[in-house]
Image (cartoon, rainbow, N blue to C red):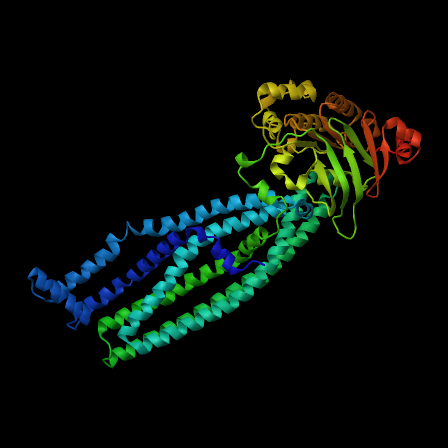
Length: 605
């Protein structure tokens, strides 16, 4: 659970700069008080009333040093000099010591934490992404980073210095008339305590509505992602109604509970402030009439106390802004506190430090048991030996554990029992980044980035030469369609590869995998969603690869696996049959039954 202290630690690397800039900004706010103080003393001089003792001593010392008479003119000159220093001389200095460093700290922190967020995204376990869609994650991250960036200059550059100014005003009033100072302090403590109490309640409501807004944004993201399905099923009105209900519900909570709460708080603050200003005026006027303070002090107290109470309005507004942003900032820290995957340490290391391996491609699953729920194993005591350059097909009904077995090979999950060996080495003892660079996979849905064809082809191996790219494209039959694009390899493929057909994306995925020159190549149902012609092209591309490296094929369409050296049939997480195509047909088991169903057209997936 994230706390307020986590928000403070966000800026910790720049604590020294932050402390200096906050102190400087606070000092400038206190220096501002010199002007009303000097104006009050000028009034005393003009009305022939004595100035403060400290000021009089300063005038006397200056008169002695400059051999000038200590009179009214010199006193006014000294006071004008103070006003000049605190206004004109300060003007070009303050922006650099204040504003520059406040935003510098905020922007540097944003840069640092944007890197940390990306590192977190890259190291979270896969199951996190099964439960949270991209819209929810991106929204939480963007709001958290943005609100941290905007909040720091406001809190460090305004709120804290304004509180310092109030403290300075209290000290000045104390030296003029301590009874008024005590009343002033009590009123301030009362107003701030009331405000903090109310803000704490509003922050709790803000955090609750933040969760609802995340769900709404998540659904909107899903609508955009699945817009073709929405239109195909003509559910636009249903989605509009559903989201409109969410928007209305959020509006009612935000407007009639949260926003109204802030308005009530502001109303109470302003009412109490005006009462306090009137009381200070009355007490100061009475003290002046009784001769307890001079006319100049009367003007000074009234002016600076009004300045102090006028600061309560911006202080309240800044506190409200912080309260409104608090939920999203805490949500970002809760995201950063999520447990990472077991491979996190290796994935975020310097790419130059990744170990380089070379395997023959011998893979041994030894007594492997695994379940996403430890009490419900998906794989049960799997024993499977894959020899170098061998082509092994994994077949079975949906949910039999085929894809999970491949995820174990890629170390997305660790076995609960048993081990997976490559060339006799336990893969858990290998550098995960270096190990994965010797594997490659072609998924059923090939992920394509919004860039050029060449960028996508060389994604796993940016150092590949153009000759290597062309060779991989010939093997994967990408060259059959590359000439259809006017810019060929430099064609922008669009978001998620929208300019490519399913078959073209699959062939691009095969070429991308080949450019990795992997020791183990996996095809995860690479043809299951394609038409016959595209499937045939992919099969021809796959056939040219077989025997060049260890190849694992996951397939529902058994026509894809006929030429495999070994076909492994899984059922309910167990290996129930092993053999080549002809042997398994003669065996008359699950493989024979699946083959018969597909041959008669009764089972097409």
